[in-house]
Image 1 (tube, rainbow, N blue to C red):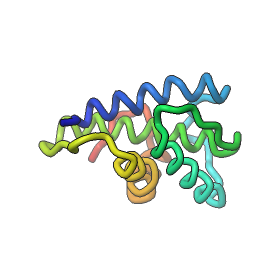
Image 2 (image 1 turned 90 degrees about the vertical axis):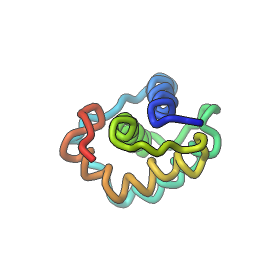
Image 3 (image 1 turned 180 degrees about the horizontal axis):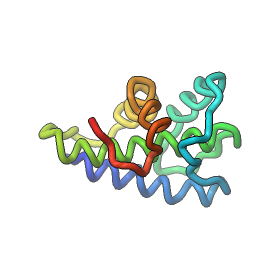
Image 4 (image 1 turned 180 degrees about the vertical axis):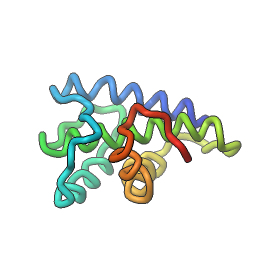
Length: 123
């Protein structure tokens, strides 16, 4: 059985890999992202979810957005470990998509705008 912390560890490892691979870093939370780039970012997040263990190279303009999503999802997952007694069976592409796309739209985008990805997450 997976735990939220184990899943956060996977996201965190990916956050260590991608900035060096992409020559890009996690942006400051004050950086504004174009709403018109969100659909492209969603598509690349789906690709990442399907092949998390393999390097993937999205266009430069969506790379910071992906890193912001991953950083914020990692903080959220760490918080879930403390507050949610349920645990996922395993890390699946659908679970990755949930955090990088669906939960991003529902809640994490607003959290990113206010606090960035490295701040503690309030559920």
